[in-house]
Length: 245
Image 1 (cartoon, one colour):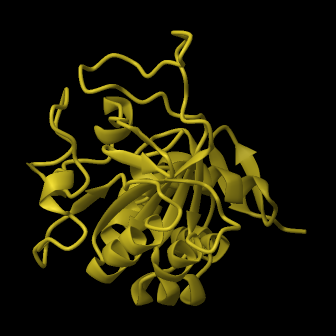
Image 2 (cartoon, rainbow, N blue to C red):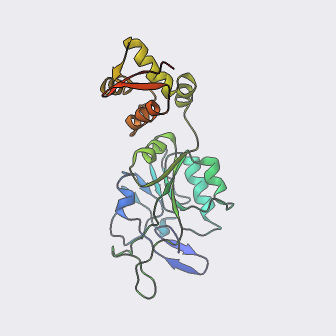
Image 3 (cartoon, rainbow, N blue to C red):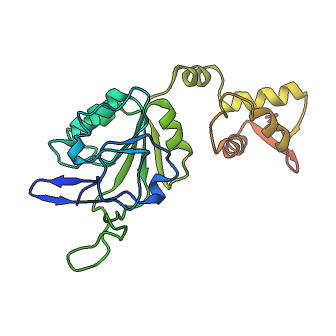
């Protein structure tokens, strides 16, 4: 079984429409170059079908792509190369990390989200994919979402889909922040500037404007985690200071 809107394997052809629970947290998208007609819903504002030859079509310079490519092992690498060169969008693939074609993901993607469950795709009429015996069938392999471009890496990080987020590349500003000040140093600086213990609420207010928290959905959890890892002590209910020993 394969991933993609108009799927072609060697010796077989199936249509698999991406479910809305995957698309909605990631969208909206400008272009789906691997769409199907008919389809129960659009994956992007503009859809190209197999007849349009989306691989060679003009995608537009600033177009955000949703790519669920035809999973033919001799062709999928060409699609990955195309979106990597384009530099903006998200691709849905099998997590075949050992294959030659996945090397193009490692080389070009900015981040990956290995989904926590397999996907049950839809047929063109919106019904769920089934086996020849009529049983609901998943994709048959672990799925991974691949971001191309730093903006789309941020979308994957914040989308809320269950899975493991793996950043592959960082913008220069993030690297500078990481080198400049750690989470522990940022929290310690807030406490020192206050010249004494601070409440967790005050820490949230101070760290919330820090570059390390910008764009991160779970930065409050990171603050609490850092407080509990050592170097700080709770001196009252919700009140923290630097450790004295």
